[in-house]
Image (cartoon, rainbow, N blue to C red; front, top):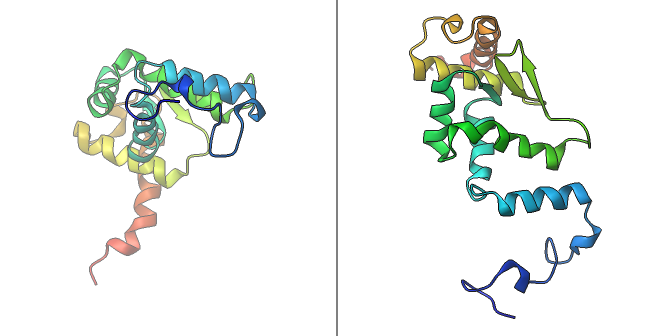
Length: 164
């Protein structure tokens, strides 16, 4: 068996980790791993997932070209592939036939189970990034929600932001 830089995935034993045989993992997980392996942006996808949750708050203003362009600049994943790439998370975390995402008024694509204060950090980033005076400049129907999330984050941080 060849190891190192010249090794192919088929050269390794079919184990997911040191001691878990792949045949004992759920088919959906194996399909997801195969999708990651064969995706042309596979090595960038973990970074996309982190950017999506940790930086932009698990919310994507998916119809705004500037939003998708920003994600493309950060991750190297082409803007027209960002949404489908994010939806790969469903293969790992959503029960079969369901999704981890929901839409708000056909403006926001949101990942479930992201805390409000994390979402608010993404709102604040957008305010700074796009120079917004009001979130309504970015979202016609859901600007109020981004403002509310921003306020929630501020209220969590405000006691720590005061001068000593």
